[in-house]
Length: 353
Image (tube, rainbow, N blue to C red; front, side):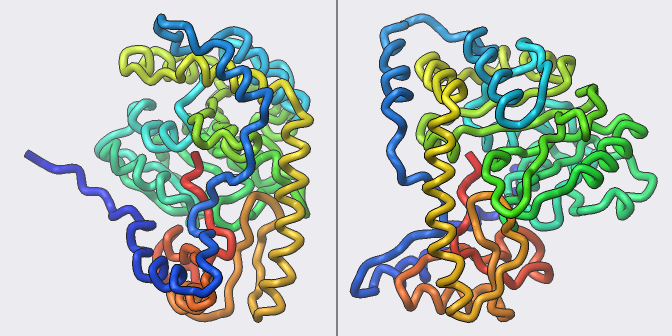
């Protein structure tokens, strides 16, 4: 029997720095995983409880009210109009979808899945689960005449916080459509623009008003502190969403009904998002000058939850230096080949859930 060959889970390698950071007299400051620490909004918790006594199976497609709330949020928050209600599909967080999407879209042996050069590890793992090959490239020029099965975008980026402009995104869409390549945009940090305004791949300025061949992945983990609820959704090309729905029905990939109701409330209430943004902005304004004062250079980081920082030394050295001071971070080498990044996370990425 052939076993699935996957890389080790990167965060499992942080046992040494974790132990060292815990020895600090003031205790550990764990920034190695960007898990939410703020309370789940009361209205969202009330919504979860309000449908807790529904013993029947939920629908894989989600309630119409949830999908309508997602459509409204896309229009209000991100300038994406006219998304058909049927073209929204709730997911069990976003990490699950990232890991299984190449498989769900039919990728397999002999197929290429393009991922960013520096990227969240699950993009590569998803390709491997499908039996496909992950190809790292930030420019379609580097891909030449190839025709990959699918191409991942991530703006704002996890880990670097880099924002791709409208022109860049449009060129990728045009390139992919000429070759009948599916483009999937991980937009989990789309609402967290600071020094730049992130744009959805479904925005008319990028898509030309058509969502053909495009999918956008969204999460409520950071915008509403729902990481523990496993709350996300995918939307875009109605035909692709219908294909995903058909497979997920067979596979039982269903968001629990109480979580669907919690999502509906969170997506309908922009004030919840604005309050959370203010908290993240305040923490960013505290951390950024502290890092620069300690000799770090911060690259990109114009959006998203994190700061991508370096002292121009091997990432492991930075991780050890911070651990001595009670701070646990994840090295930049978790996000690409060792020859690429030397940076370390001062506020490391989550599991993008």
